Image (cartoon, rainbow, N blue to C red; front, top):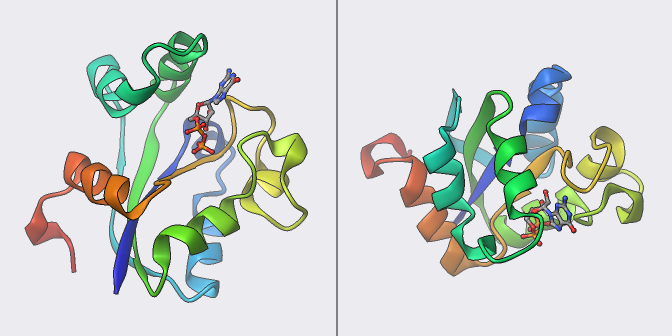
Length: 137
Ligand code: GDP
């Protein structure tokens, strides 16, 4: 059983498609081990995306991630990390395959609806960033 972290970003929360996105995970056989709606602080967003600190889009990324509430979710299941990445689609929604979350709900490369851990190792780090062990079923 593998776990991975998903974030429904402020654009998708504002569009009121949280339930539709969570259903995609469940329909693909993933389970919701924990979930929480929250407002990230600037310090939260900068720390979470620290790996991108030197990238030219870092400032825009942080501003966007604190522009409204997000929904952080731990997904659980066989091959959860890669399954979630497949459901998300490409980073740029214009390049995302039809039927993926980003193709269906995202507008642009920064307002791209969802985050998903990109490796099992990063998933463990990202889950621990948001959730205590006792919150994970
Ligand atoms: P992901 O794993 O598919 O989310 O993509 P990355 O880890 O490469 O990038 C993290 C996030 O940074 C993406 O989801 C985008 O929101 C944002 N991002 C990546 N590349 C760009 C870019 O070229 N411009 C802008 N504005 N944002 C970007």
